[in-house]
Length: 442
Image (tube, rainbow, N blue to C red; front, side):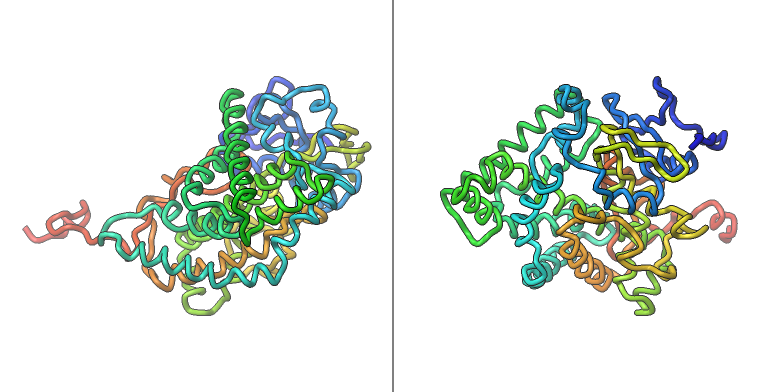
């Protein structure tokens, strides 16, 4: 597959090896995804620290590779660069240098996933509903105490604490440990970290999770961390101590950060598309459709590193992904793929034909499909209608183009979401814009 040039006004970044260099800060994730799609379904990209991988940019090809047995997530077995000791001191270590179900292949993956599955059964997820509703109501009550006319950061005050409380309740994280753990999980998502910062983050995350495990050994409770600790202590062959820590990193980190962005991205999409919000407030469209369209149009996770070719994988029409080469799953690119969603793929449209869970890959596909997806959807299905029912005049407090995306090219969300809860503050008497002044009587 030959690389087609991108339009002159949107050139790909220069890269020493001739590949497309991703922006480590993720400042224009969707623009970058569009440029990659223009180059082809599979494009060789350079990630921070000089890591090369094939970015998979179309819905059809990504869905196919996510179920291809020739694709692995285990760098210890299938990524020669990792086996040679390369990249161990970089940002990628948090993602691939761990031992949990997300970096396992074949029987190892099934063993580790089986231990986590009980945390996210339909029955246990449904049992969380009263807690989610109560937590939502308490947060909304707190928001109501905001001084009229004052702006509030909805991410910090609502989108973040709700899923953090839910996942920490589920895994028994003590109240006094939650702010620090949330900070560490956010740092782990940042792909702009220096080697020293990445090393420090790994150390701090491991220390925090080890302290949680030690607490549960001393004071076991009716929570999933206690259950995993018991599985580890009752039969060490089932789960090693490192696998225990890395599994907690996966389920707590993924269970928090992705839902934070789902709620925040949905609020952002609706506030910047008031016609779509009106359909929801008028009950013309169910909230389910808005949640699924958000997951397609602005997935919480834009790119996930890494997968690896177990054998050569010739792609239809070329190229061939060679054995041992790395693969980047580009969910943001696939979500707005015109080949799947038509010429309006880049438009947020909650009435889009064929909308629904099968229309996007935001939670993955195949054996690595996110087990926490039903819980994330439930949290959004409670949080979003409750927010707009309580504050129907909610609006952004700054122009949309002044919002800053979160750092890194993996997660997609906004660093802050400043809003006015009860509509724009009134213009003080005597302050007129230039047009009004021109019309005012002298």
